[in-house]
Image (cartoon, rainbow, N blue to C red; front, top):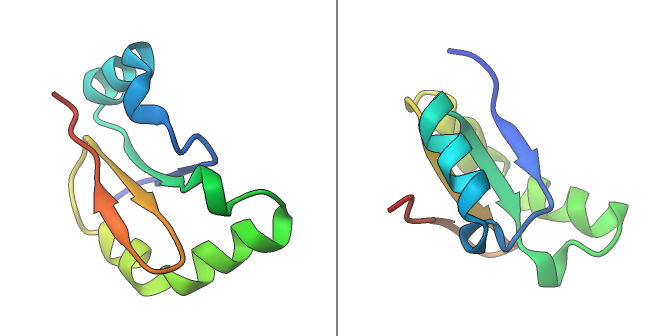
Length: 79
């Protein structure tokens, strides 16, 4: 079904140009929670804690953005 973008931009919902690009291109994106993704180990920890939930997103059509933390994966409104 294609690629899934993973980014450290945990504040993506505040950037209208990025939201527009996601909508326009039907992108599928997971943003790592800014407060928890300081270094490489912390980023890897978030991805591994949410691995199954992130992998399940591969079956969903875009556009979408989710923010991942160690304990949750929540959808971001594209509106």
